[in-house]
Image (cartoon, rainbow, N blue to C red):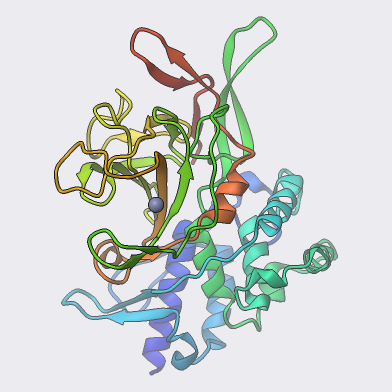
Length: 383
Ligand SMILES: [Zn+2]
């Protein structure tokens, strides 16, 4: 029983250690925040390398862990012949647009100060208090939290007795981990020359190129009938055939080609491995951007990856069998590779997230000869 608790904690701490893009709580030098490491040797053979601050935070929590019963809804144990391991099996991401915006502002406003606040840890604190239900969100709750942090408290001390905080921190980090951070982007200087600039902030893009109209509604979980009765595990964005589709986040092409549900689709895995972005129903005949050619290739956030269409719902390739042209955008969370396929996939409700990303539309231009679109200002994640 005790050993099992430790494994839960170790796996949570490992995942958070690997994924967390910004440090929890106050730091003196944001540039050095992940530089100090501590080696921890748990009961398993692998040696894990944790940022010291995180390790301190989570090693404390090992002693105060919730019971296995408390965690059973969130964490699952597998023993499939490999080393037994535990990981999150369920996430209901309900963070509202208002809360996302408010936390992002607190993060960006504090960047470069002595107390850089990680937006994800702020949201995880609130999510823990609300039991994940952000219909309870009040600005005052965030203001109070920020006041306490300014007064010298840290997220670690404030959450020491919040037994589900590590769960929300890991879950929200899995959803939002790559969205905010350092990046470089091209900008024109006064002479019209394009130069690279380093920035910090929201670096993920909306999946529809800037200037292209679209419509949407909250359709996550709605019923779908093609093939078998199932729930709609993504967000549909309706627009014109040929609308450029933008990579929301940097990563590596993991799936490319025809799928009888999604038609022409492309799946891109985030660098941290926890997010799989799925873009489907791309255009008949020329679904992909000329630069998207093979599984395993690298894609940068803001890159044009393909064009909107209405292919899919057919075992025959290159067939338009979807009534209205739209992008089906899906985001799958992967805490363990066994979750990628099969019955226990975790897909995120993207309604609030796509609205949140609307402030970061990628400007594109069209090359007349090739009819391909490209971003005017390329960008790349840093770190
Ligand atoms: Zn869809």
